[in-house]
Amino acid sequence: MALLRVGATELFECAGCDGLWVDAATFERLCASSDAQAAVLHQFSKPGTPKAAAVRYRKCARCGQLMNRVNFGRLSGVIVDACRGHGTYLDAGELHQIVSFIQSGGLARARARQLEDLKEQERRLADAERRVAREHARSDAHTGIGWHFLIGE
Image (cartoon, rainbow, N blue to C red):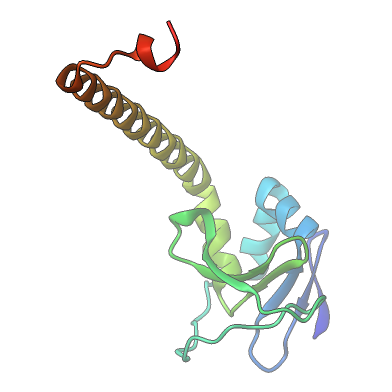
């Protein structure tokens, strides 16, 4: 892999497949900085054509462990290879797709979706707790044993 500068961002590019390795801190800065994103879109003016290939799990360039394949931002449709704490491997064209997703408000949509999911989980948990309480109340009424008996009153 060869060092590639995109604006002030340093990435490593594979000459064979045009894939990119981005360390974790650099990837976070890139995702947060509109200047860095503009440099990406300028340098990679076209999204590139992802090469059709069989799914394969890559090893992290730093620790050698198999990386996880994740949908960037949970909504982007861009499946990247990530090693928590070390970095992310992007196939040809994926960096452009990710930056376009971010700039179109994709991360904000992903956060909103995540909040909706958390609220739904809370609602389901509250519903389950109410169901359990009702079942206990019915069981107590049926057996004639109240909670006071169980707690020693």
